[in-house]
Length: 253
Image (cartoon, rainbow, N blue to C red):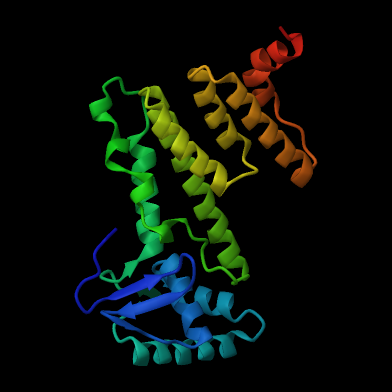
């Protein structure tokens, strides 16, 4: 996690909206919060796009006026937080934004876990201890906000998070570090309980360790979730993975 420069701004969007300047929390009206959040998620974005997205139900002229007044309000509360360059708006480079940190962390993890390693000392996951990561990394983006642009980015971050966790799980399992792989895999299942691929990674670990009963239990958990919540059956990929266990359990002693 990046350190906030002394006296600098830190913007939190995961788990709730908050901005601090040094030790002080800055209070902002809802319109200013939405402007700062939108610009931080869509860096160097045009004023026209900002106005049209945040004030969609009024005329372009009215929306531009609302944008100007909100920019002025933000500048009064947090000088130098927003940077205007011609027709574009951005959050200043020295502002620490938790979503930027999250994107960078999981992008690095995905990049580092590509390919197969044979030497455990080369494992990038040694430097990434899931249990030591700050709790805010797992928070949803702006809970309680339901604008389309928030929902879209919330889902994008969720997908990035679970892909990175699955990649880390596979990497640890390939290195034979099954206990750590299982821990990360269960985090992935918790983040996306209806995502079958996360359950499959956990099942593969159980199978690799010879824990057939645990693999079957995880399969049944996944199958029940899919049926109850989505009305779906497990995929052929899942059935193929579990076929030896399922056939063995049916055959009996």
